[in-house]
Length: 369
Image 1 (spheres, rainbow, N blue to C red):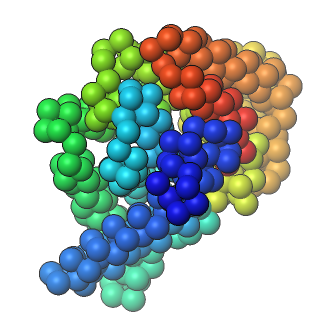
Image 2 (image 1 turned 180 degrees about the vertical axis):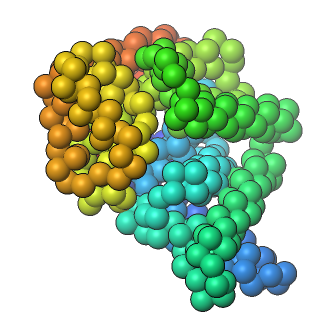
C-alpha cells in the first residue's frame, strides 16, 4: 500500500490514462534504482560497460508509457494475484527485455533518435569518431557496444524473474514464457528484414509478422507472464492470449499510421523512417492494391528512393488517403480491437481487470505516440 492509501491494483485498474500515469509514477523510480545498481556493479569491472548501461537507462527513462509492465501487473491481478509490491518489481523485467529489443532494433533500423534521445549505437558511433580514423570503424564500434549492452540488459530482465520470490514452479513457467516471447520476436524481426528483398509479400504475411514481432512481446507476453506468476489457470490464460494477439497487431497497425502521419514531437524520432526504408507496411499494401498506374509509380519511386523530403512524405500521405488505404488500414485496426475484446467477456476475468483491458484496447487504437 502506498502512503496515500491507494494500492497498486486500485491505482492501475481504473481509467486507463489515469492508471498508466499512476503506474508510471510508481515504476519509474524502481527502474532508475535497478539501473543504477547495475551500473555500480558493472563499474567495478569495466567503465565502458557501466557507461553503456547508463545510456540505456537514459533512453528508457526519457519516455515510454510502461504499457508492458502495466499489462504484466494487470494479468497478475486478473489471475487473482495479491502481492502488489512483488509484482510491481517483477514487472520491470518486461521493460528491461523491451529495452534490449529496442537497442538492437535501433541498430537494425539505423535510427539515431528514440524518445527524442540519442540511441545507444549512435552515441557510441559519435564517440568512436574521436578514436577511429575511418567512419565505418566508428559506426561499427557504436553497433558493437549497442549489441553487447543490449544482451546485458536482457540478462538483467531475466534475473528480475529469477529473483522475484514467487513459487519456483511459477517462476519456471514465467521464464519459459519469456524465452518464448523473445524467440517469436526474433522470428518476426527476421521476417521484417526478409520482406525487404522478397517479392509477392501479401497482407497475411505482414499481419503474421506483426503478430510475431509486436503482439507477442507487447501484449500477449506481459499479460501471460503476470497470470502465470499469480498461478492463473489455463482457461484464463487462453482468454488473455485470445485478447492479446489481435490487440497487439492493432498496436502495430497504429504504429504504421503514426509512422506516416504522426509528428516527430510525438514519436520522439523522425517521421517517415519506414517510408525511407521502403517497408511494405499494411497501409502500403492496401495502397498498392488500389493505386492507379500513376499512383503506383509514384509510390514505388518514393519507397525505393532511400531518403524522403517533406514533399515526398506529403505525396506518400496523399496516395494513402486518395486510394482509401488509410481508411482501410484504420478499419482493419478497429476490427482487430473488436475481435480482441470478445474473449475477455469471460466470467473468468474479474470486472476491474476486464474494464482496464477494454479501455487499454481503445487507448492503443487511439494513441498518438
